[in-house]
Length: 177
Ligand SMILES: Cc1cc2nc3c(=O)[nH]c(=O)nc-3n(C[C@H](O)[C@H](O)[C@H](O)COP(=O)(O)O)c2cc1C
Image 1 (cartoon, helix red, strand yellow):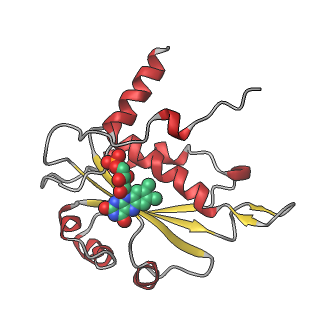
Image 2: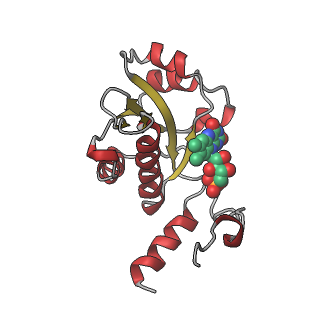
């Protein structure tokens, strides 16, 4: 066991889907730090087929929240929308052509959430939004797809909810002979 592992485990515990935010804005400095940690995310063939739309001003936030009709979202002071670029992403051409845009976008999204947690900032992944409406409102061109939105803000409540997860024995198996 290393210190880094303990810290990583603690960070993984600390990140949770926060849906209750205080009025305090997320500073530009914190958003930059989060984006920098996201930039370092790995991607298939290092294609980095993503763009981060950082949304903090009231008008753009309203446009964004109109794509996901949940009241709790209104209180989030900042969002990062993860835009995947299908034309830039690696496709598994030698076999089935599988498009890896979603996989890469998922990795950068989790970097965002973990980086936010390391700064004491709450986050929540959102995928259940109207992607077509989002693309229209934010003028996304061809090949671009809004894959996830991360709501960000300072948690209004202290503490971390209990993690509800399957036991390790249910999700991992040793393939030893
Ligand atoms: C790919 C993905 C999509 C998600 N979409 C939504 C969503 O649309 N709305 C929402 O409130 N939470 C969403 N979540 C959050 C999950 O519900 C949450 O991560 C899960 O219940 C585990 O809880 P925890 O994040 O607090 O550990 C999403 C999470 C992931 C990874």
